[in-house]
Image 1 (tube, helix red, strand yellow):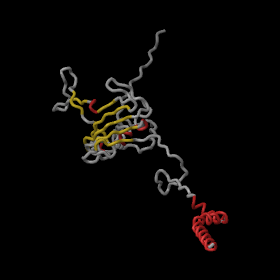
Image 2 (cartoon, helix red, strand yellow):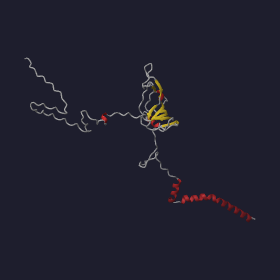
Image 3 (cartoon, rainbow, N blue to C red):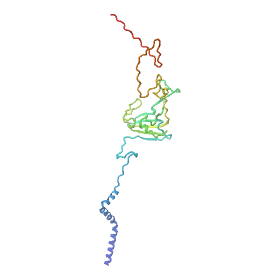
Image 4 (cartoon, rainbow, N blue to C red):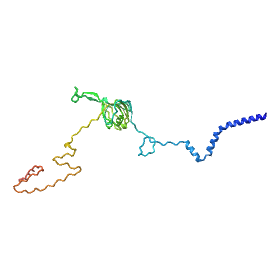
Length: 288
């Protein structure tokens, strides 16, 4: 009986030892790997555990001819921003054409309106094209008309010019212009009808593209003599001097040739007639 109990106890102890063996196996196998590994074999494990930092990419795609440099934090001192309030349904505006715009401008610092298209009324014109005069002798002012600017040709401040890019006819846009793309360090003084703009003022514009037309052709100026300026004949029929050529020296005066008696010298063919010099008065004897 005692032998049977002893066998059962031994069997239970063996089963418990076998059940605990898989739990201790990972710790047992991990320990030799770290302790017995040589430096040459442990190095790849460390490299795989800590990934290398990715090489910083340039903030703008560089063409093949530009070398890459080590760069840090990219800074942008100013930026032009805009938002489309209404996307136009008409034709896209084209650079180099005359854009007809309605606009209103505010100072970004205090919100004061300094200019607007409807502040500039135009005088009415009659059938003859002349302004219609009122009873007070001043021109009668009509309704304001949108301004016309040649788009993309630098006739306005840069922020206004670039901020219109991509608009369509009928579209409305709000443009936020930094002072570097507005009037810079210049100060626009106040006027009786418009507030001024201090130096380094950011601006806000609301614009609407009403229409676009072709640029008017410049008037053709007539050229004198039918040729290029500077190449027309000089007075007297002589050809113009070659550009850069010095003026020919004046001929030295020659002594008049002696003519035979009774003959009148023939006048020169091309020499202009000079007026005769007045006779010099003879000195009169003074009374003593």
